[in-house]
Length: 163
Image 1: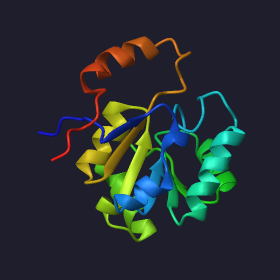
Image 2: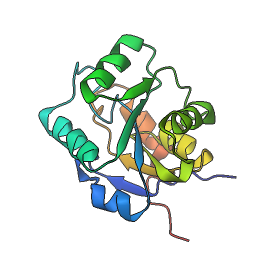
Image 3: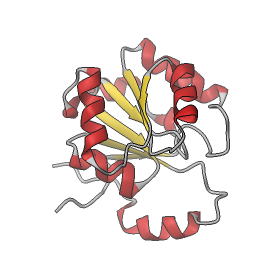
Image 4: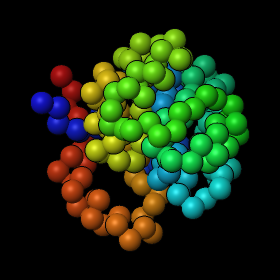
């Protein structure tokens, strides 16, 4: 049984440093959009997120958007802006999208980290796929159901203990 404790938790994606990823052998990031790179209602990432994405790419970190978003237009728009490939309707936490992204990037699952804001989709799917899991605090705190989601995730909102 997998308990969905993330490997590391950050306030936002800009806290994730390329040096840390390289130290862990992580060569690529699977990125969630809504609640992670931007709020669900935001049409594009902020300048700070844009700068962070460029920094990752400049340091040789491959990027791929893995989203449960139903809209291919939204997912493709973000991917074009970033300059990476993408998959919408990923059905996270199913491993299918995670492993397809790994194959597409030419990386092994242990060389990838999922960056997301949800325990039961991003973190659980990443762990089930053998990937590093980097959780960020959600940018979607304004949504009516956010307190409910936070409540059911509470037991797992702690960093995974190192083995």
